[in-house]
Image (tube, rainbow, N blue to C red; front, top):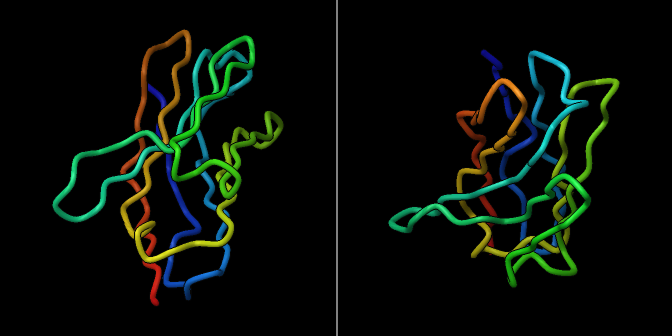
Length: 115
């Protein structure tokens, strides 16, 4: 099993930035897929950004130009840099990682953007 723990969420004003972290309990060097998802109140979970093996990156339209995904293999951590945050970005953000061991999800971190 692999545990994923997100951090970095919080309350931010519109126009502000946050960097979320997703720390894995094991090496992510062999990750086949890594992604960030979010669930806003009353809405279904949606993909924010993902990267598959080979480097194919997919962004939600709302994230293009504002959000970026990255990772630090030495720290077993995946990041989500979010800039120019807007109230519609308010949600619980969760990371997902696919490793040879299986597919794993974190519990999420709350991001609240005030107007």
